[in-house]
Each structure stands twice: as structure tokens, then as C-alpha cells.
Length: 162
Image (cartoon, rainbow, N blue to C red; front, side, top):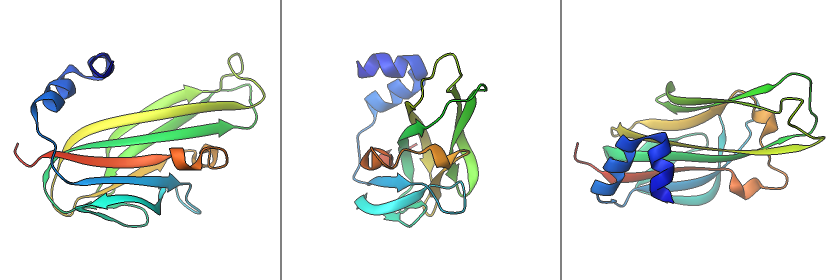
């Protein structure tokens, strides 16, 4: 099942993941909507091992090949006649390193209340002191009421050899 998923997104990533040993740097943090920006806030409940976890970013302590992933749940309380474009961006040092745009909640497909999930993966080489964060163009739709613990940002280091 995992193999089929990666083949659909990137056969190169699958080959890399199958051939590199996992190292000991990892972060797994719950995220929440920010008060005044599009950058998601990291909630203190989580795991940080050999990665510095700040309020709105993760800071790399050891260079290497990292898998960055983000799982987000959205709630659209009302449907409109026009679709909603949701954009998630992985930032490295405040510059977009990877982005995904999904169009959801078109009037013909949604009901009164609609729930959607977005899962994004990114495999990239990171240096010491690189800062990782996530932004959303519509953070107000992040479902923090019924699934607050299911909105997460994670980072795993696979190798320091490239």
C-alpha cells in the first residue's frame, strides 16, 4: 500500500526512502491556526528529538536528507457557489520550498458542512539552522474543534550523506 502511494506521487522519492537508513532526528508537533498570519503555530504537545521546536517553526540541528510531512483537517461550515482554493506551503528559511493547491467545496459537491483532509509530503536536503514552517492561505478553515490533535507537522531525518 505504501509503495503504491509513493509511486503515484514520485517514484524517485520511493527509491530514496527504500535505500537510506533512518537516523535519530525527528519532530512531530500539533499545529493550530495563527492569530494574525498565515503561518501555522506549533503547539507544545509533541516530540522533538535533535530538532529545535519553536512556536512557529522547526530548526534543523543536523544537516541531512529530511522527510517533511503535514496532515491537516479542514471544516467548511457553509458552501458557496464558487469553489475554495486551499494552498499549503512548506517554507524553508521563510521561502517557499514546496506548495500544493487544492480546489474544494464546489457547490455541486458539498453539503451544508464539509470536512476535508490534506496530507503533504516533501523530501529535501536541509542544512544546520534551516527553519521549517507551514503556511495556509485560508487558516480559518483549519478544523481545530472536532480534530485538533490530528493537525500535525512532522520532520524525519533519513541520512546525512548526499
